[in-house]
Amino acid sequence: MGFRWPLALLALLVLPALVGGYVWQLRRRRRRAVTYSSVALIRSAAPKRSAWKRHVPVALLVAALACLGIAAARPQVRTEVPVAGSAVILALDVSGSMCATDVDPNRLTAAQDAVRDFIHGQSGSTRIGLVVFSGFAQLAVAPTTERDELFKAIDSLTTGRGTTIGAAILKSVDAIAQIDRGVAPSDTGGVQGDAAPPRQPGSFAPEIVVLLTDGANTGGIPPRDAAKIAAARGVRVYPIGFGTRKPTSMVCTAQQLGGQGFDPFGRGGFGGGGGGGGPRGNFLLVDEPTLKEVATTTGGTYFAARDAGQLQSALKGLPRHVHVQHRDVEVSVALVALAALLLLLTGWAAAGWTAFPS
Image (tube, rainbow, N blue to C red; front, side):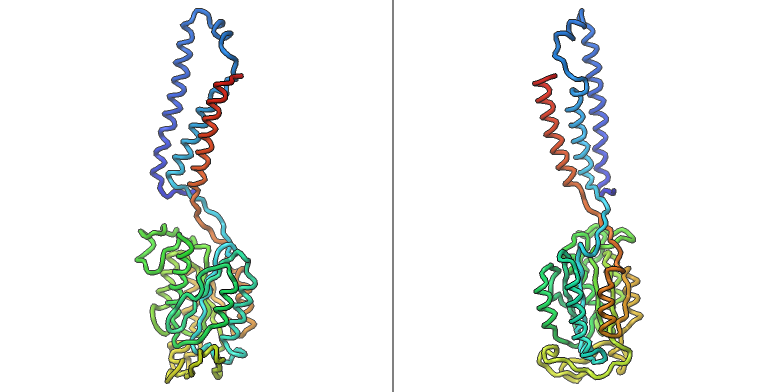
């Protein structure tokens, strides 16, 4: 157990003083009792009462004050939270290179099918969000347990020009920050001093990011820098590099093209940096070194998927690679509720046992 405001525990020092005062008061009463000429007569006239009962109200009161003192320090306990009980952000590359047909019928269609199966396989309590990125990243669906909204968004994906992997990571972090107060948004200067508490080294948020891309970053913040921001907030990123090393022609459906033309080399329509930022002949290839570095920096795992089957396996096997997360949960409210209950019992014991001694 830890405390956010440990100095508040100093308030507990008053409890020994209260107990000491109570004991002193008992001894003082005993000294007064001996001044009577007949102690036996006093005992026979006094109502019978169990010796321990008269101490119960004071004990309950001290316990209640102790609970309040500990609650003031805002205690936190570390609990284990599996991914199934939290949220997964799917960051999906929709750059023009996802029209490559080296994965039948093309990369984007195979990715859509795999993502649908992945969503179907998740627990109904797992919140899933969808971030799509090409030349820029956007949150298509905020983390939700409603599956129909996700499937509708996946079915309506269209390709765009460019691949901004770093921006997709930051957008995913922001999506997590909206549902987890322990994760600071990406646009803050740092975790320390922000609304979210500092992340302890080696601890992770229960939410994760699954990033699927077929190319390399073409603009915006570099993925390495974005990974450092995610790591500072305890957000794990699990990149999946999709596609073969020998891509062929690119053919997308009219829906995937959004009704516009397609030019893989950026002379019009979609294309441009479609899948990467490397040499002209390599823009369809996954930048594995960078994705592996992103995974290492954030504490995630990198997966390589050369075909639709490997992509399905990577997504289905993901929970086996995501260890149980640890999260600090504040228990101040529970202690305050316990203190209130103890105070009620104090009043009941003091009134009941005083009025009806046994």
